[in-house]
Image (cartoon, rainbow, N blue to C red; front, side):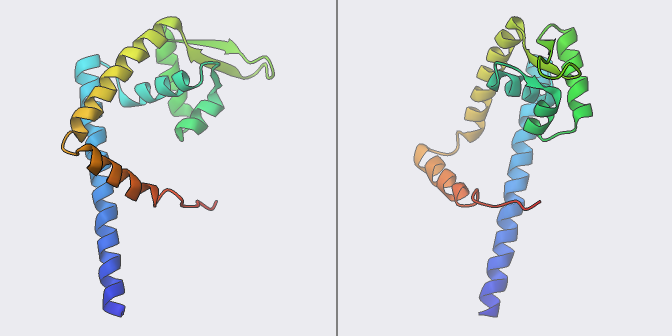
Length: 151
């Protein structure tokens, strides 16, 4: 029994490390393609994706929480997106100290273009898996998503 437990634990560690490595490799490919083909960054893409997902806009704190990054990181990205005319900032009606950020019309157009490329790149990366394999992998990963994070 003890040996089985140890072997199982080692295998779970190997799977976890493989998941991390694979995720990191995919992210590196996406970062490189965004930089090379679009002249943009993954954090910038992530901010635009979050704002696209919330058409009414988000407060800076909500945006930070949604992206799970510090407010300082988001502020710099939002400032650059605003300079490029891709986001608009408005004073929050409920809290005059807070600003709501949303994609501008040109930001929305730009994001649609980036999202289409991003989806194609993901499709290219996942090409080695057929539909059945993708479904199996998804089902296996779903079994791990029921985790509770205690704070």
